Length: 221
Ligand code: BG6
Ligand code: MG
Image (cartoon, rainbow, N blue to C red; front, side, top):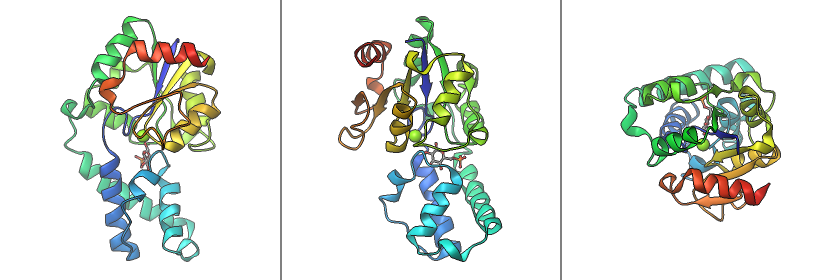
């Protein structure tokens, strides 16, 4: 294993609840919709615009809004989200992640971010982790969002590595599908049944280690 390509939301810090709260506020205020709890998982890994389209489809409202109105609503949601993440600090780094980063670096593994979030650099900055990563793939520069492989391929390319030499790290079903489509080894955190497409699934980020990543990569390659 020469590279570890990380998702951010749900892997490095738990921002899924903030995304869901921001979407819920927007849906209630602008669309008169109450989002069911299952939406929190369904929207994981999905880009801002694709998330809004899913919400509009859920409400049977897909054709009621122009492209411009959709962009304006997505922008509004991002305003709510930015407010919610204002207070993030290094205390919000998920368990085991700082240790894992140290272990991977000690073994010369390159670290890259493959998040769908346009807020990834700002979040990493708040967590004090911006300088720990060798690269951050830019989601606005890839053609297709997760579950397409594009952002993971961009993450590997940004550190000049072949996908086969990399492990991808995810918490979302769409993200695990993206890693496998990129022909990388997938390490996932969360529900074993939901994330069954991954090469290994652990219940919490505290279970991540260099040894687990290396062993899983060896077995899967
Ligand atoms: C992903 C989240 O990391 O980023 C999604 O899991 C989110 O829920 C997506 O929609 C896009 O994020 P942003 O910050 O660009 O709106
Ligand atoms: Mg995620």
